[in-house]
Picture 1 (tube, rainbow, N blue to C red):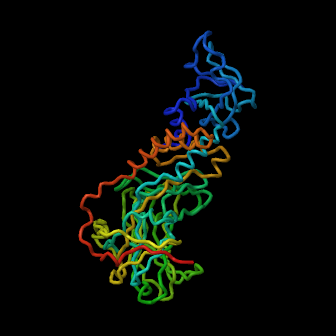
Picture 2: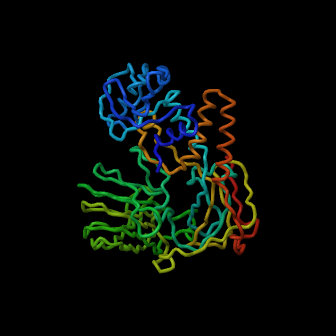
Picture 3: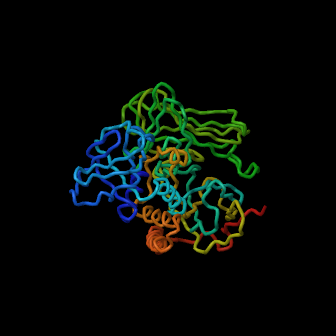
Length: 449
């Protein structure tokens, strides 16, 4: 995964006019030695003066992060600055960035490019007996052009990001978090993305140290206020597929709650056996007749690092069809139409009924790095999933645009937009399947206000 520093360094790699990066060989209080810059006495001593020196790998960020060079010794490869003394005078595995412009301009350009670069994303919504679905839960769907297509899937799962594959949330600690799930913020808890999985690319690592760790999601029980549209009195099952080395540690609970968050009834699964293998835990819950919310919560209650590979809440009891997640999506074959306004509303066939899913494919912007950390100059090593070359090209364009260098900005804008278009391109082929939705029966509309 690239970091903020990696994006910035890629900018200088593809456009050396913006700066350069070098492996550090030594550091003093006010000097950096770079052996590859030992060009000899005939080299210009002005070549690396008046450059912004960035040490993104320093152990003492943000104090040692930025200095401005004033002298360069081409024989010794030593660059000097007149800023405050470095606190960290080690140089092991450190990279020095020598930038032509203020570092915060590069970071702002990267952030702006992330906000405006989109990727293909698929989200699901549980169905009900009414025909209207508000899309305000998907904050990036603010324009009709953001929705690519809409479909339908015979799946009783009521929650998204079932397999922990979506990580589009940047926490205030600078780490990526899984979409939709609320991670408990216990002071001793650590949450991280792991490559150890049962299936798929990622799982959620949950480390407990002294205080229980939780992860949860909340689902409305009654979408429209009509009894026939709710799952009150019906069965809902919480499913957690996890790995644990401690018995009586990991459980999943389904809780019927009022709108104020008061518990009306709850059901907790048996605990993982602690054998270290992947196990499926289930909590089959009868939804309270007065419930307005369902909350599913996973808990790690013994000190360990447990792994979560699947976590979902479904209508009814679990079966092998749901376990396999093999239900296909039938896409609407006809273009959707919109009315302008926010939030968007989807109008679907009335005969879909409870226990299925509406599927929405959209063009979603990449998440940015945490803005507070960027401003505080502590985000250099924070990770990201966006493609490094695409974002770097766009950031170069944005940087030149900020500086009013229109000719350079236009050159890089063309390169970036061509790559961004390829990034979004998908050959649909004939994957629409049977048209279960007449053209006029599934059209996103908008709330007028």
